[in-house]
Length: 55
Length: 250
Image (cartoon, rainbow over all chains, first blue to last red; front, side, top):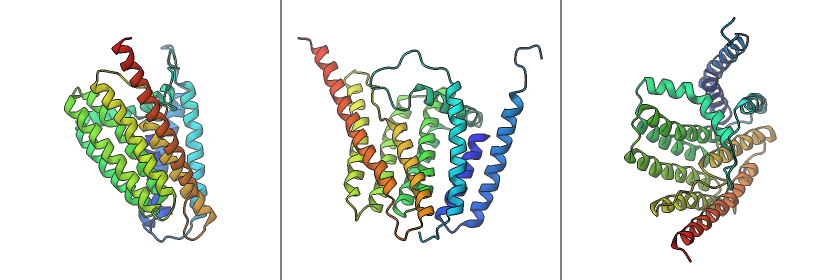
């Protein structure tokens, strides 16, 4: 999810910086940020799960 | 494209890229190191490549589950590279950098997907190699169009020639029965250099906000790529000649 979020964010920034498609850019930035945040939170939660079979 | 400067957006994009690089470095540090580094190894070593492939593995698994044909990714890569060339020609550097990185990622996906689906074949390998060259040329052609009134056009031509010769030296050596994997600057390095060069150049020009920006940072990246590509092509040719001399005997 994080790589997809990053790709969407960068496409959003690209459209915002280099084109007049500001609405599309804003939509991509919101979607990309949401995906990246969810991906980061998932990874963070996983870090607290014990993987040695005892927890 | 005539668009106004957006320094605030550029700073936000730079912050996101910086945070992503910090996370990436953490991931790379956790990736197991290879057994031994070879001479003339690519600048982006196996650790970085392993981390990137590992990061993209879930997307690759999803593509395999959807039964996406590897050839579709190969052709998509060509389309993305043509768009990257158009973006370079139009001076949309940040977008061009993104498209270049995306094309590089698709380039990794097609071969990996073919292997994962068990559909790897000489036909696919040939198509991939040929389309890769056209894709690179499309990107360099766009860059050449942007620098058409500058001495940097020569650097673009040299970088394009060097990049093609790196691949040609390997293909010709393989045709003669040699394996030639060495080379400091191979395709991933070229994608990273051009992609990040365009990104940084685009961001800096939005912050500087000078009319008729000529993107000297991208120009420097192209010059560096020209030197490194030619160096790698010459090194590969020398290694192939040495191997052929050894095979021929005294």
